[in-house]
Image (cartoon, rainbow over all chains, first blue to last red; front, side, top):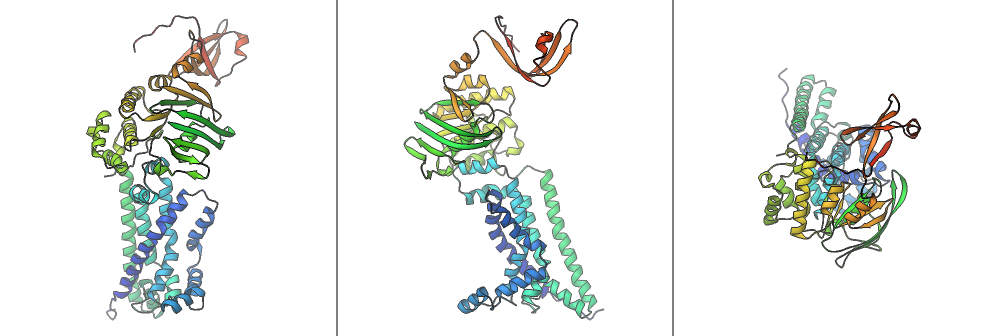
Length: 229
Length: 284
């Protein structure tokens, strides 16, 4: 019972990965979600379907394609290796790229819904006031979709912490490099170290619940205190 | 001086039609734009603002806003726009809403004083009444001292007292800033009171253009008075029939013969006219 020690490295790695992924995805998703919310183009449903794919694809399928694309057997992987001496699989960089694909819909969809719910005239009033799209997004659109914004950030973060299949496919299980908490738990179970598996799983369960609870409390609060200050 | 000559295909609720408007507007004019819903009024304003595309030409004080293969971006047109519903930035206070357009604290102070909103400067839009919000919208539209002020039924959601207040404020602002203005309105007293010129739009084209007084009074014969209403009930009396008609907040009964009654049915929109009566006006 006392034979195990709690290693923090897998947790730290999970949170580091989730933080970086959330930041990158936020920067990429705001313009994409804005475009999707405003466009009347026929391309919209195609882009929406593409964006939502990671929700329905088995992580192994997504992981396999990402692995194949980033490996030196593909044009992209070879390009990065030959020109910049960068390897993109079985290391942390590869994990970040894979996570960005995996968690994309969880960032884009709440933002897009939020943008679509905005009063169209309010956005137009900003343009009429002489403001560019970027100024309008930063000063008017984002501040008026705080609940959606928070949902997008937190759920993306939480979803990335919780990923397993894609991480295992693209990153393997290299300690302090790609061995995140979910992978560590899998390995404990494989070697029948159930005590450690219990401890790690329990921590993940508790953290995930706290994260989600804080989102729902905030949104509940926003809904019933609709006066912005 | 504003020169407008625009065309646009519209796919409205009444089928397809062409918006086709050719118009000169003098500096400082106050234009009232009237017409049935679906006649293209809102689209016309949006084309002027640059919010919708159209072909043709718009030249404002020598600056080309629209021409072949060229359309000046909405951001650069220097217009003011008051929407039918409030379009205030909900994350900003009254004052911040105005300052967002232009960092001109002196102008903000003046506008809020004219509209008697100074005490609400720090309040957020959601805490204001509909009338207060619409007055803030008006102030915000004036912040960049627009070359053209466009208003799309700005009072339609307000009660009569608030309408009157806002009308007066619009007049004061118009005199103070000499802003060329186009306002969509259905309210005849409002049009009469505010505008120097009136346009009536039907199926995308101008069918009337002139002084509001002339157009409004010639529309009906001068001695007659009429109300639009809806038949809510037709019932049989002892010797004749009665139709019950709702006009505004009132129900009116009109006697009819059996023959006349055949021509009407319940829920039909009708006009009630009276002629050659001497009308009496009472204070409310």
